[in-house]
Amino acid sequence: MALLINWQLLLLGSCLVASNSLLAAPPAPVIPTGNSSPPSSTRNIEVKSERELLPQPEPTTLYRWVDKPAAEAARVSEANERLQKAISSPEFMLDHWVDLPTSPEVRHKKAQRLSLREAILLALRYNPNIQNAELDRIIQRYELRLAHNEFELQYALAGAASVEKSRYSGVGNTTNKSFIASPEVNLKTKLGTQIGLNIDNNVANYNSYSPVLNFSINQPLLRGFGKAANEAGLLDAIDNEWLNKLNLQQSVIDQITQVITAYRALILSGNNLQNQKLQLQEARKTYEINEKKIAAGQLEPTGNIQQSYQIESLSLMVEQAENDFKIAAQDLLQTIGLDPKMRLSVPSNVVVKKIIVPDLKESIEWALQHNTQYLAQKMVLRADERAYKVAKNQQLWQLDVGANVQSGRINEVDGQRGFPSIYNGQNINQTARVTLTIPLHDLSRRSQLISAKVRLEKDRLNLIALKRSLETTITNTINSIESLAKRYQLAEKQVALAEKSYELEKKKQQAGIASALDVNNTQNQLIQAQMGLIGAKIAYLNQLSTLDRILGKTLDHWQIKLRYGA
Image (cartoon, rainbow, N blue to C red; front, side):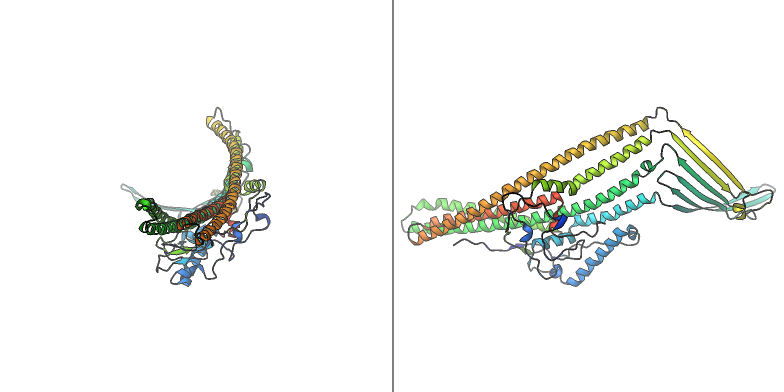
């Protein structure tokens, strides 16, 4: 009869709580379809996807572990609404705080069962790295707003007030007051045109109010002319915004992968602890059997020394395994963002129903379209190309044409003052100008062009190198998946053979052919084989998770949709 190990892992920590966080996810993970589906397998090895076998989330809410689940749900939901408003309109932060939630402290000692999917959902709600990435989106969105603002209408109202008092010896004194209000409007176009309009108003001059309207326009014809020379900053900001969305997605993917790895590490650590305890238990049974044989004269008095040494060695291994288990538990709680005093339980095993080895060509093609690091390098190259065009434009001569119109000065002929002097057509000064500047031995501008060309060439090489590195990484990862799949299959066969050997030794013992020591030895072999099997399963599944992270498919794998990337 096969040795079956069933147990639960209990960890220390705080109350598990959840919220309406940055995701919208269905109750259970399913295989994505369509363009978002992972590369299919074209190899002979049949490998299985973890998404088909993950434990179904319990029907109860994630808030079930807090004293007041509804209140916690409302608290987190309100915080998420504030965050969404702040990202949509960053000026929301001028008068408000987002106040993202943190996991409440533990209130009771009861251990709660935690599935892998629930661990991921909780991390999406409470992991500080994810929350920081979400808050960064507020600033990033406003940076894009500032870039657009460069080509929007700029308006301001300036004012100045002064009081001047003069004293003249033997004559008397005078006081002059001046209050000036100067509204102005400016506009810059993507062709480099600059338009300005302002009015100077001295509103305190008694009986001499004479506002002056100034209109100016300036247009570069060589240096500074055209969209390529003026729009580069805006296009860089648009690319950065797109890249910021990818960075948020990658931050979430990285944290999810860490949770997955920590969760499985805890399962593996728990299995190791349980198996070490079982081996210690069997060693003690063997010691007792030997003691009976010594008492019956069937074994030398020194025949149990080696077994005593084995017990002490296993006791040491159990102690180390217990410490490793506690560390793994704390690592998981920290990765999720939960109170380290929380107590929860996780499954004792992982299940693999089918083995898959992703197709190498499809995986590489997908990664070149979705890998964040590679896409970021492409964005850098695009920005370098724009910077090169700007640097080339800066080498041109400066040839500008402009015009000024000033209206509103006092006409001494008709003595007309006030606003009518602006539009009566009699108080107008008009100016047209052409400005030419020829740079002679301008090293700073030459340096700008040289730097832009070198940077562009370096980043082209970096893009090629990054592409090759990405292909190599994917190739190595898939080769590892294939190797681990074979290792898993061999481990299954090893467990099956160990079970048969254990059953056979038990039958031999019943027939008087084998001793209890022989049975214990085969039982220990079975325990070791089972440890190797779960280690092989977890190593295989972790490698699949690593490939998902490289391909940028982790969110599709877990059916998670970010709300705050737009």
